[in-house]
Length: 186
Length: 112
Figure 1 (cartoon, rainbow over the protein chains, first blue to last red):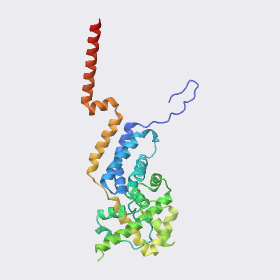
Figure 2 (figure 1 turned 45 degrees about the vertical axis):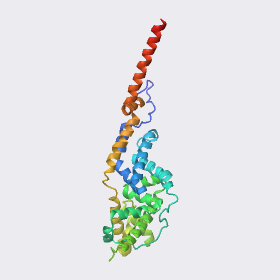
Figure 3 (figure 1 turned 120 degrees about the vertical axis):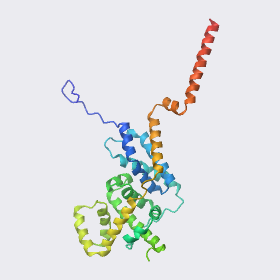
Figure 4 (figure 1 turned 120 degrees about the horizontal axis):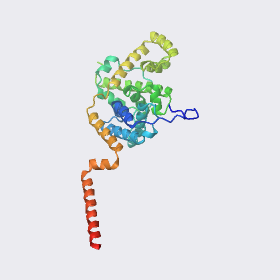
């Protein structure tokens, strides 16, 4: 540490973000960010565009990143905001999916879920309203905790929990209905 | 505890986000309520399935490399990027500079 002639320590200089370190950390999270964008958009092409935009925006705004802050939250927040402000607006005219919470306790049994294909889950997820889907995507697919998800969604931990609970209930209901139509329930 | 109250706590427990003071009443409720107990198992399974979605996408590998390349280009100075991506521009620039020097030299010699 530098000591001045008067014996006092100089004021600490704010740490700067090392570009190389940022790149390494951001690229390390690449797969998780990709999965989040896929969950949000439900389309591989849109997700790829969104990932590219997210990383380039993050790199351009690197000076705004607070050293020591959670880089995953930062990237996910950029992705989410870009999605909500851009990609999502394109679909304004289209139906936004089921958003009303339905108290439906009759979900699919575990065995039934095993018979449901991944693409069915993806389709059901895509049909959920954005507020439910985003919470599920961040927590279940992006492997973020409630606090991180709340930061991304600019919300509270309690709201994230409610959205998750409601979203999963809706998802189970949709999967149950799908399974029933496919006669898995026989 | 009512089933409606248990619903969100089940979600929290599965995500490892339940508070200590909430956990014991939930356990008690789950012992008594078969429906909520079943819901816990279903939600666990749903979470497991969701967690396995979108893994191993091969298209991401190429995109990752493309993004690294784009970021690296933005890090490098502008002339270096131009030289790398458009080498003919560099040669054209050098050629123009050489022609300009020759013209200037001839002009200078002629008027001497």
